[in-house]
Image (tube, rainbow over all chains, first blue to last red; front, side, top):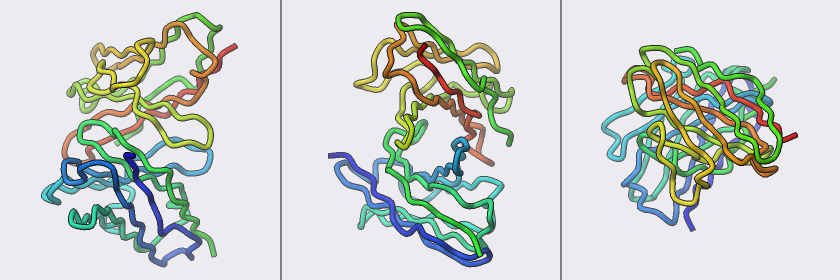
Length: 116
Length: 111
């Protein structure tokens, strides 16, 4: 079964850090670019960051540039998002997604709550 | 990079056809044939419905079709069914600086 499973979300204070993980199974992980997409409660989808199959190309939304770092480990079929200097506006459900020109495969998301 | 503009809501009766528009700029929708559409039911993850403007992934009903003209892309749902009631988001490639931008989302209601 093709699957993406996110983990690492939780409650964090403003200014602190959190690291999200995404475990892939059921497909050839290193054939795909990978992305993080978030959705604030009751709001729409926002692309956060993406990384090519070999980590050679990386991109970030302006809203997280300089604070978030995406990485992947193809040997472990895993994707990561290191989130530093978290803000209230970063509170959202964070989805891991696979695909190059579109997001073919989605996980169920992990919730990040930023609050003091 | 601003979000692509979609109507907040669209509704139709079972069996009818509806069209959702997605308006961007010459820097995103107008420059690339890399528009995709996603269906999201409440509490669920998004699902890819259309990619590269008009292509359907395996398993997606042929009642869903996509097109593009200039800076505006469209998703048409034909033969509307109760199960089509969901939120729909478009997404476009927007260049190497900030590669992807989503639309504001459209709630489809089946009357």
